[in-house]
Length: 146
Ligand code: RB5
Image (cartoon, rainbow, N blue to C red; front, top):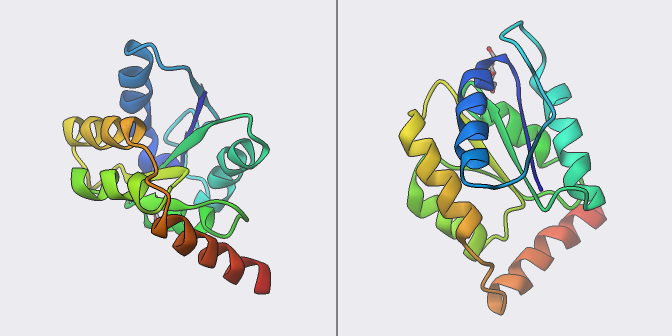
C-alpha cells in the first residue's frame, strides 16, 4: 500500500496522483488533507510518515506547495528518507541510490503529467544496495547520534 498525503498547497496534485496510481491498480491510502483549507504541512507529514515507519505502508508520497516544507518535516521522522523530486532522473536515483521511502512533490511547481512520470519512476525503481546501503546506514547513524 502507498500512503499519500498533502497540505492545501499540494491537495490538487495529490488528488491527481492518487487517481493516476489507483487507475494503475496500485493500492493508495489517502491520509488527507481533503480540501484546500489552509493547514500546517508538518501536521500533514506525520500520518504518512507514521504509516511508513510502522510498515503499514510500503512507501509514502507527500505534497505541499513546493514540496520543501513537507520534505523537511518528513525527514525529522526516524527511518524516513524523504526525497523532493522535480525531475525523473532524481526520482530514479532517489530509490536506486538513496532508498527513499517517501517521495515529495510540489503541487505549485510540478506539472501533473511530469508528477505522474516522477511517481511511476520512483515506484518502479529498486534500491541498488551495496555501497549505497553503507551510505544510507551512515545517514541513520547520524540520526541515532542526535
Ligand atoms: C503553504 O502556503 C506553503 O507554504 C506550503 O504548501 C509549502 O510550500 C511549504 O513548504
